[in-house]
Length: 114
Image (tube, rainbow, N blue to C red; front, top):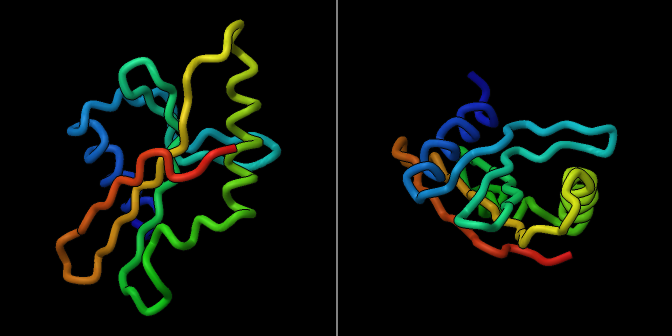
């Protein structure tokens, strides 16, 4: 299993423990993909998962740069068009560091705004 797939699987389990209800995983559109779409109470949450085996290239969440945020936002807008009324929503990042064999999780709620 690739690191990205393993990271997303670990993130789903982590989020379920935090009370998130998973709606979609690997939601794909012609504009891009969102790793996980979930609900946190009444809020629709678009979640980007970043995993690293080493911190040599920085912390995992640092890879969610402005271009990546823009792409996620555009895909989220496509997803939200299915609703008659805009539900509350936000963008979270799950950052996973595998450096010491035991994954270290960091959940960044409201990681960015659109």
